[in-house]
Amino acid sequence: MLQAALPPLLFCAPGRQLLLRGGTDVNFSPPAAHSALVLAPLLARMGVYLDARVAARGFNDGGPLGQVTVTACCETPLPPLTLTERGKPTSLRAFVAASDAAACRLLAEALQRALSAAAALRGVEVAVEVDAPLPAA
Image (cartoon, rainbow, N blue to C red; front, side, top):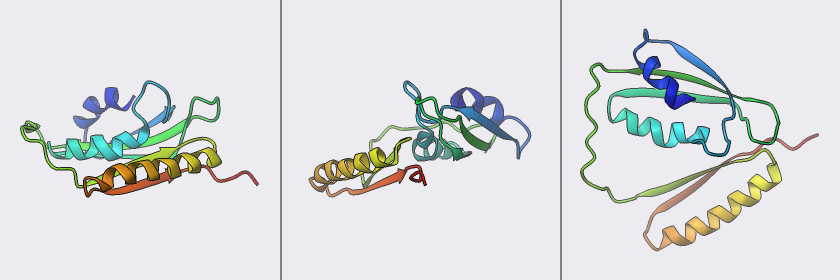
């Protein structure tokens, strides 16, 4: 939904926000973390400010809907984005989110081990973030 809603949001009056509800981490769609970790830094190179804050996650498991608040603005006209040279990787960040806290932690640990082993060969720093729900009381 964010990619479809972003162009009109960019050219609205400054300070407008979107409240998106639905799946934040579902099959066949970019996960919510993609907005902050990939899309926002790339758009910033074009003069676009994007802030997408996840208030609640929504998964394919039939649980509650997710909720994301989005604020965006840009310079007009948008300058072109020129990507002609590939940079050298300096770090690798992974983000793990799941509706099951135990599974989320296990996946994050396995991912940390695998990425660290591969990154050590290239001298790249690795960080794995986890957003797991709190265990039921």
